[in-house]
Length: 300
Image 1 (tube, rainbow, N blue to C red):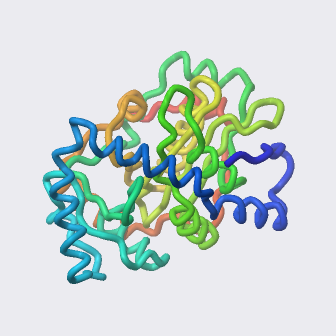
Image 2: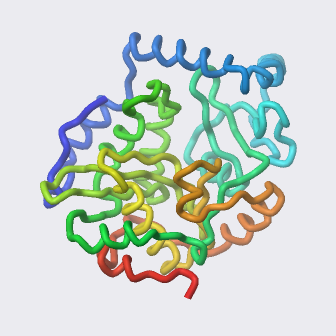
Image 3: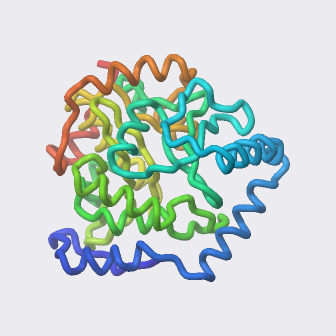
């Protein structure tokens, strides 16, 4: 799924957005066959195959007696770690209720599933780390970061092919439709990183529920540009009174930025408090530039 990159100065016209979504919300038979082939291979890898019996048992039980209620995150399976239930209702109210409960949807293949991992990767803003090299890059006036400018291009890039990696994405047309609806309603937000030529070189998206922000996916086509976008995003989240950035599962990028793993029970307690905060609805706009953010001292 590839689209022409828009110029920074131009808004996304309604007809172009409709054309983008029409292309996004479908999957060719070849793409589907590739996703299923790689998804089966991924699930049968040695470190994951032990979770197949638990997954099969849950799917069989759901087939016999479907449970349309949102599952309890504390009752998620130990193997596969965090599998909580099968998604039946994927409407916007249910999606938002799931995030407030500490669940998120994810699946490469088969039925879409609710997850609540035993450890959650959280960034508390006082712990946000910016290297000296990143600060220098932010001051060089080579990039600009915006919010909520081009959802379609961002989610297409997040679902796109990555150099040196299998093309196995969980961002299916069903996921895209759901998060597009949440974006239109002011719950999902994107950040975009543009170079001087006006090309989209990095970005990501996530969902805000009260004072909690859950990152869904990100991409980068130029070195360190995803960190530029995340620095700008987290500066604003801190300024706007958010409680934390939720990266879901820990990884090298999250660790480099200062995320740490928090046990599920601790996370759910923090989430309950965060979702009672007012948050920030509607379209977001950047309130400063990268040069200013480069001077941010989160622990001060």
